[in-house]
Image 1 (cartoon, one colour):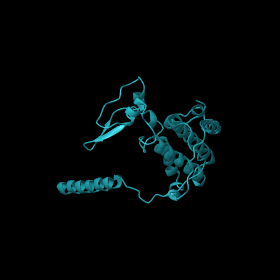
Image 2 (cartoon, rainbow, N blue to C red; image 1 turned 90 degrees about the horizontal axis):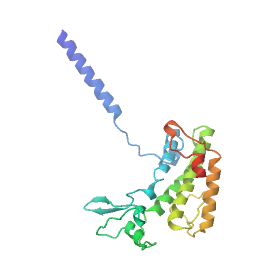
Image 3 (tube, one colour; image 1 turned 45 degrees about the horizontal axis):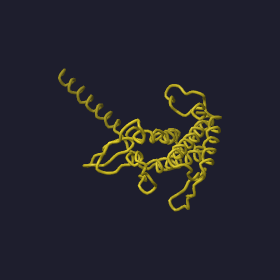
Image 4 (cartoon, helix red, strand yellow; image 1 turned 90 degrees about the vertical axis):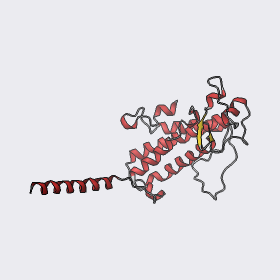
Length: 225
């Protein structure tokens, strides 16, 4: 009788373990769209967090990579364009070498570098600022989130400005694939004014300091730096 009881416990335990394991399996969500993202407060917050991902891209120490033998070989960042570091010589002429030798230009610059990354995130910020109003989060949080997105948009414009000088300012526009996009450059001075004005506006709705899990998010001090 005792052996049967032990077997019963073992079977029940294995069943409970398998049930828990099944419930812990990662579920991939494939049906997210703009409406569903901004109808959920958690997804809304994650959308904003995604815009933070590339804030340090242009100063990454191994920003430039070369593909060789199916592997990505990291060999430097913008520090190799000055006397802070030496670039790594590889078989291909890479962006860091061209920055260092003064041969970088619109033709040979990588299209997926700062230009693409900055404008992708500027568009994300525009999408967020437009659709966050429909999200089921409190008005105070919406105000803070929009201010963060506004600062991040200005940040990515400053990244573009450091690399290219005056660039097209697209405002709050959200261009789709078939839209006629603005391609004319605004002046350097206009871009600087836009960035400063946006940062000053964002600072009004941001705290001076975040604590805990929010440490690292944009603050009023970030805007004024």
